[in-house]
Length: 278
Image (cartoon, rainbow, N blue to C red):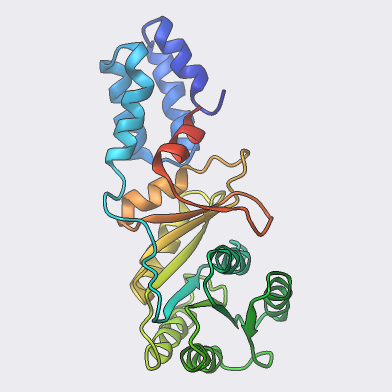
């Protein structure tokens, strides 16, 4: 029945007691929706009739989210550049490959850049994905300058008329200022060759409230334009994605739903909230 379905069912039959409200609030907070959203939903439970509660909760959550467009603006005839950023272990490299596969399937000419030069496994992983989906990957020697690899990739994408350039950057601890400064350098170097159209932060759906702090620090360094939430597969609570969007005003753009190359979809608020609630 999902995280909250049993509560909606119970509240539709009888008035919520103080104990019920306390328990429901605890479940809401544990789902990583955030304290503000939890308190707003509890207030709705106090006011709404049971049969209208679920739709009222959905409307309340939607109203707190980003209200602008979520699509990545792609154009034929000019290069679109996407920078993929995030902390270690969130699924950045796989997300980069998934996006490459998605856009290649739409007829785009895609180039990947393996800029995580400090982790050989990440470079090899992206190369393996590139071979599987038929997308070229630009890489360099281990521990080489990530900005230089990105410059080479951007230059090739421009000269060979690629439609889409997707750069997988190194995973960084958001608390390490030197690493965040390096990420800023990557952006500046790429922009000497071509504008960066999107900076997408990969958010682990299991990370909890720390995800908001992570995204905030990254946005201060490289001006995030969107979020990708990963590891949302039915066992994940997933509320942190909505809480992060609400807190930072940065739109969720994609949802990673599994390990397969095709397990990514554009974020749809109605579907995501429905899955989360029931």
